[in-house]
Length: 365
Length: 128
Image 1: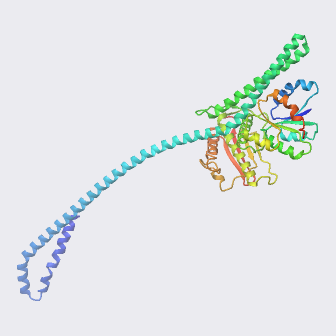
Image 2 (image 1 turned 90 degrees about the vertical axis):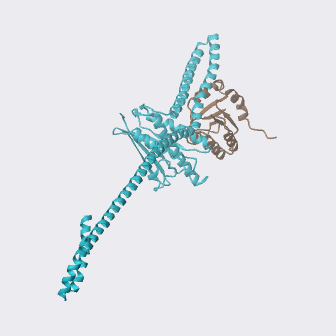
Image 3 (image 1 turned 45 degrees about the horizontal axis):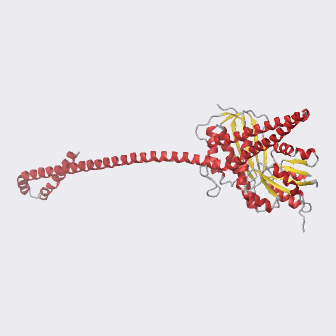
């Protein structure tokens, strides 16, 4: 192509050289002389111009090639630099991901501890009660034993028989209270324990009631004036559900605490002594079509419609700063859907109340 | 002397009956029980109740709310009201006093102390 270009340049140079000959066409002698004299010079000039043109074209092409090569080298260097940057970014991204996972794990732990803190007062109350019975029944049994000794000494067998019966019943009461306190401590430890928890056949009704009491007394410990009607409507003869009790307990605690918070907020917004508002939180269970449904309802503030889609998002909270981690419902969602293959849905009406429904497969693999 | 004991824990009834078995057997004492504030209010029209022993932490109406209502409903014949709770809490104690509680006892109950104080609780204060 370069050569063709050179030839074209030569050709273009040849054409103007013929023009003077045309000017002398009127005088044939001059014309002939001119042709004889000019012919060798013109050829030399033409060759010179052609060669020069080809040289210029060659230089141009060389320059173009050189420039293209330089550009390619520059681009290669740039590309290599960018590849290095991408690798650096990938490393940073991996480190950030790892850091995020660590923070997430820490936050989950924090949420567990926060909910444990919520439980503490409730647990204290729950443990204190059976311990009181252990102490009180033990004390009264000492008195009864003294009476029994007296009855045996005096030969009053009828009284002795009655006293023995009382003592037996008291011992049963002491043993039962001890077991109850032990079970509460066990539940608390299980709640705080991290790591892989295993699913086991669980009495969902008992779990729902136990955590309702713990959550309620926890609220009462925080707010001395708080009073709320608790309603339970539990399915009779509900078969044990295969679930991870400490995880579902955590979900229940979150739902109850949210419900108690909502009714307290509604009571607060109405002001002291305004109207006849009776705070109410209820829990119900129902078995149907191979599934178990648990509902936690309250007649609290309800949730505005524009907030509902965000309610299960991590770190979303409507509570004032420091009162909620924003992870409660998010973790609950994860536990129910990913951990247990169930569903969790929310039905709410602003100013009327909220119902959260959990649906679990009656039998899990 | 009729005493109304209010506690949501059922074993408390057996405990009181055993602890006051001598007084009951001699006819010096009668115990009636309620497991909630709401149930207690239905039993209070019985004018022979001279002492109320009430737990504070109960589902539904709390012991403090019950106390407040008793003081509103029966200003003319105020029964003695003693509040009982599972753990010592100064704020609750003050609140109970504010609402007009006659005393505040902490669980586990010291029945010897309670027995000794029964007369004090049920004897009207003589004005000079």
